Amino acid sequence: MDRETAADTVVLIHGLWMTPLSWEHWVTHYEQRGLRVVTPGYPGIEPGEAGVEAIRADSSPLVKLGVREIFDHLSEVVGALDSKPVIIGHSFGGAFVQLLLDAGFGTAGVSIDGAGVKGVKALPLTEIKATLPVLKNPANRDRAVPITEKEFHYAFTNNLSVEESKVVFDRYTIPVSGRMLFQGGFANFTPNAVTTYNFANDDRAPLLFIAGGNDHILPPAVQRENYKKNAKHSEAITAFRLFEGRSHYTCGEAGWEGVADFALDWALAPTPGELGKS
Image (cartoon, rainbow, N blue to C red):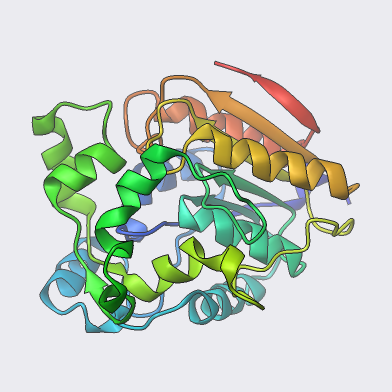
């Protein structure tokens, strides 16, 4: 089947501290290109502004919510579609893209500023600083942990002013599942970790890693190592693209349309290798 005509649906998977609302502009953008867009939330997280307010008021659905429960939920959503979609994920959503492709879902996948699956060992200092407020306290494993405006500005929106960051913070952020962050952060020290991934899967769909050059929480070193491990061990199409100067909030800060179009255009006609930078 021709990949350029195979997919008429895009699935957008959000990351930690976020909900499906964070994709609101991408949904409109892709719908204007004639595609159906699906934005599944994690279990207990509803779409829209009401979903953000509900979780802020009662974060109990996030307590002990783990990677496996979310993966199973996403698998059900994607598997119920009438055709295989393009799957695009941001941050931890990028890790879910990999896990879904490894399980046979999707015509192509794009991981944007994605969290590393088990086996990716890059751990830049800025990533440690951004995640330490949660990981420094083992008790947070069984909690829903909020992020402060200051922490959010450092981890996500470091390209924005404090005032601009607050607007984003107020609209989109929710607490994080501590269990999920611990599972991802300590996967390399955990036998049978829930983020275990087969880098040598020759049958998975094409996979693109997009990195933001000024991303603090998941810097380019994480995406580049992930890309190199996939490209080395698998014959499946694997690619990497660096967007210089962009923060972790690359899907929302000025110029996001260029990232959105590049991701979709590649997914509809995948090519391997390092695709330059911009």
